[in-house]
Image 1 (cartoon, one colour):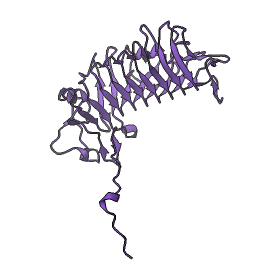
Image 2 (tube, helix red, strand yellow):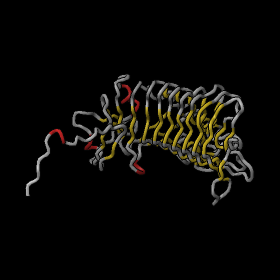
Image 3 (cartoon, rainbow, N blue to C red):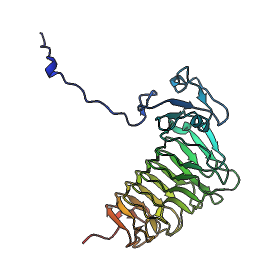
Image 4 (spheres, rainbow, N blue to C red):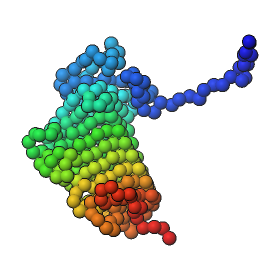
Amino acid sequence: MFTRALPPSEWSIPAPYTLEKTLDLGGIYALPPTGKVYFVRGDGTTVSNYDDQYSRLIPSNRPLYPSVALALADCKASRGDTIVVLPKHTENIASADAWTFVAGVHIVGIPSGSAIPTFTFTVAAATLLLDSADVTISGCRFLCAGPAGTTALTVAAPFAMSAAGCALIGNQFEVGIDADQICTTFLTITGDNCSFCGNRVETAAVAAEITDCIVLTGADYCKIEDNDIKVTVGTAQGAIRSLTTASTNVSIRRNFIYSWKASSTSCINFTAALANTGIVAENRLRVTTDGGVAHIGVNAAGDLSLYLNYGVNAVNETGLQVGTAST
């Protein structure tokens, strides 16, 4: 049997595939089009090279860096450089503004189970300040209150995003361990078009009460989406709240937020008299107080649209839609 060959006019040309994130191809990682690529694996001061699949990813002419801080020093602004942080990497964050960020750099951790790249804040003043535009960090674990079992430590403000277009995506953040190992304010967002998406944020114990989790201040077009947040904050504080300056056109969607403190009443707090605008939709919210709790606080000065947000306040309950129904 013969099959007629199709003339060129009938050929089917596949649509191009746009690679927008790191793609795991069974231990080989395809990266989006970038500038230069730098590889990191060590303990912050010494390179650790293992004879494994990840080490074999590194071209022979590319050196390993012992820290993200040193790799950043070789990046060029707005070239689209990528820093790939390999599994088993560890690094301490031990000073204020510990990394000198470079505009447009992507820091990509390869999150391999317990071998996920891990960064530990070790002093009270330690900070990572995303103050260069379009910086992204993904696939990493941050111990924002130090390692478990150490001496008392209160890290005042581990993260801040002040430059436009910055993003924290797909990371893990431990923001409190016990009553004397905590953060004060985990993350402040003041830059426009910033994103906090697909992350896990948690306090390890209900006693690890922090002052604030995520604070928006003039964070226009901020996206907080698809996160899993379980933290102990003040009774009416909320894990996400707006302060000082209105944030416009925000998108807070599809998050699970558990305000863990006994008698907690709020998960999302926009009660400050600010002209906030945007959409708060499809969030799953939990507090610990029985009866008629709003879960989402709003102020008449704002203009937020609330869609299909559901809350519970006790174990093994089905969520009830929260907010005032439109008439």
